[in-house]
Amino acid sequence: MRFAIASSLDYQAFGPSTLILNIEAMREGQAIHSEAFSINPDIAHEDHVAETGNRYRRLLLGPGSYRITYTAEVETMPSHESPGDVPEVPVSQLPLAVLPYLFASRYCPSDQLARFAIRQFGQLPQGHERVTAICNWIYEHVDYLRGSSDTGTTAAETFAQRAGVCRDFAHLAISFCRALGIPARFVSAYGWQLDPPDFHAVFEAWLGNRWYVFDATRLSPVDGLVRIGVGRDAADTAFSTFFGAITPGPLSVSITPAGPADETRPWTTDAVSLSG
Image (cartoon, rainbow, N blue to C red; front, side, top):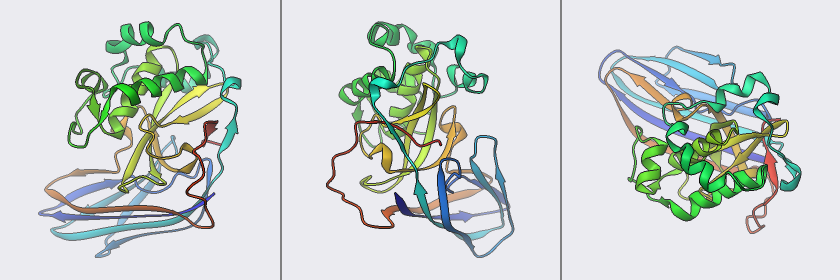
């Protein structure tokens, strides 16, 4: 499916500052048919593609007001499977490259949540259905509440206060998965039908022989995501990181089908992989 995505970010710099952005669509698993990145006023900047596929821009700002805009037309290529056909992989057989996604990280202290995860989910049938059960538990027991958390909130804190936003739902699910020996990683994305439009956070779990995407918030269909970045947690995928005297201004995000789309169709219950 093709999507037209766009984002616009305003910043005010009060002195020499550095801004690092991660707002551009990943190339892995999706085709970018056109895109444009602009800064007003125009200034020099550098771009870099990390090993994860995340695309970063570094901007050196002087005092003044800036607007950054990004637009693209992206075709996603989701792979659909029956959930019952997607197994877990024993740790002894996991690809070495996914092992880092088993470990506790800054916002995903899986070691602190292991006892609960094992007691609540440890006896469930393994595979895609167990990760879905984790998402269901979070959806049913954690309130989606704007303003209930901040950029420093960890999964353990979300578990204790039973409230959060999309990044917190993803962090908690990742922590539960890792506690059960399932590699899991954070995904930032443009999410179709997200209301109100914003950057979205979901997660992927390594099952079978690939990454499968999940959204514990149920705010966007998992086959309606354009991925921006992946990482151990939100620290690796922040859409904006700045150093110096910078004040963020208005932010706007949009994603719309670039062709015919049926917004009334039921959201898929298939196992969906977006990572190619």
